[in-house]
Length: 407
Image (cartoon, rainbow, N blue to C red):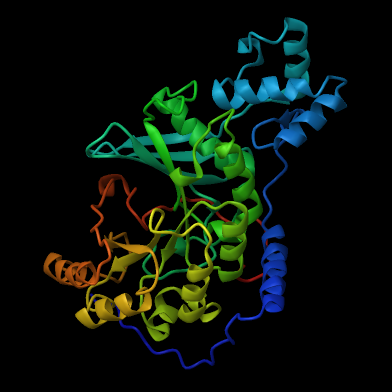
């Protein structure tokens, strides 16, 4: 059946315009995020997990156990360049020191609860974390070259409730910690045996990261940013910021901060070109309407002709796929360095929407391309294992009552 979209009659919240209001919104978002904080990265026996720590935190821990700070540099190399999880494998560290480290610390990975490989070689991991919560991660191989993208989750569940998204039917359980975020990429590398980290002139099988999995990354910014700084560190995993794309549904105040501090590529989950429709299918729009979202895109410092913004647009039959919608999309982004990814809707159990026809998607794409914007139609990947865009979900449930509502 075709979803029926009803107009929203509630008054819209005023646009986020002033710097003062932007700062206040950031503080509010961070306060809400703290209510969904991940558990401490520590084992039941008290040992601290070293994954997910900054260089400074790692050095401080070495000082705490009576060691020199240079040990942090050694550990960083073994953890993030070599991919070692066993201190006894760290051959540049003397055996007594290896034993001391093993007594106080661990180098962990999330547990791979299930691992499925699609007929098209897309691979989906269900990772289980220390407290039993779970999140999904997907590796999407390139069809032409020996490389691919790792689609990483930032939260268990999601707070946004986008009506076309399977993940949106799972309430937010908690944020993922920096160790759990970077650990997804490291565990995927384990699966493909890609250690030590390839040098800059060598091909990488796991060549890019897209923060497009479960959750809204900008509602867990602190942990996401910390994890991505670890990933980008040149003496470890050493993935360029140009190889990292963060996808957001439009958390405007945090978009500015992300641009200032991380400078990674930005993808916007747009999916509608009018506030009336976007209010319904992307409810976050009621807080940050399209005009504010586009203004934030114009401010994003990393956007250029060489590093274009990506607008993600899911094609829903008779909902947002008309030629008039395509022309309005062109008008909205006309002065931005941008491209548009058109995503055929991937059905999931219980969804009310239907994918647009191939002919209609082609008409839509042609209008966008004729206006000078690249408009590739994303091929569905991993549908047979529910690994395609919008299909991720786990059985994790919130285990405590909260009164916070949406983040």
